[in-house]
Length: 432
Image (cartoon, rainbow, N blue to C red; front, side, top):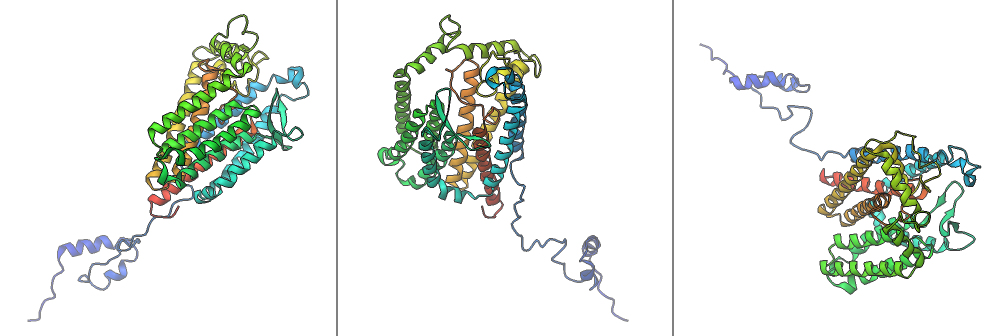
């Protein structure tokens, strides 16, 4: 009798039938049903896994779209708030589209600058932090020169550049942010010692403050002080020392206000804006902002139907844009805007904490500094428009008219997106 060929086990037959569905297995199966189990059951080689490449578009999409929504809403509101300005003799030579076109130009320039900033690794930003800080100091000095700096309403804050007026204080916010983050990384070993850790940074911020108060621009100085203090705290400075610094800074701002009659009058006007003494003086803007918000009620009077923007509310397209939003979109619009800024600030802080957890301390502190900047400035602007805080010349981030502010806001957001991109690259096993 001839010997029978050994029968192939049933599990091998089923596995062979299953493997025949994938290309590249037929050659292995042709060797016989009793062949060894192939290593490549699929086109991917599972024996040698490779780290997945980070996609070029692997950025935080919700964060990006919230910023785009704020920019688009701001563009519409700048047009709505400024369309009647040519009726004012001061702007008689302007067209109804003058401010919205310049604002749109600032958005384009800011978007291009943001794309360029996104391409720069955070290591490079860390290396540039000190030179950028020195550049900001130099520009803050240059803007005070009478024949270079441009003065408006008694303040000298702008350097004319032809297509737009550049405000060095906006660059100073970003420069101090990066400098403080780099400083904390360099001084990490002495962060528990007050004089060695805090005093040099206090001198740097103090120098910026002196130059800003000379313009004067106390609002920008407040934002810069909060950014620097916040980064020091997040960087691990002793909590008791931090609260001591906070008390000293608060006392310094109180002295600045009390020793300046003009600022002191603004505080008194804020406390009682409806009095006969203040309603047509220092409290004029605040009273008309409150009237606009009151007219909006729950759902607003409708887009473009604001009355206060018709030469009643000064600077409606800049510092008091929120009042026009409240009048045209009502309480629902203001609440939506507050929710967007709260979500945006929270998300930026989360990205910063994630970077710190990945041992990217500079990137993490820089991102959290941007969160402090955007969140605090939005808080001040909204509080001023609602009458909860004294009147202060700070724009609403991403929305108010102002080329320099839009430009630097978009560069700051580009840095946050870069930090998020590098976080994802590290988590996927790649390089930042």
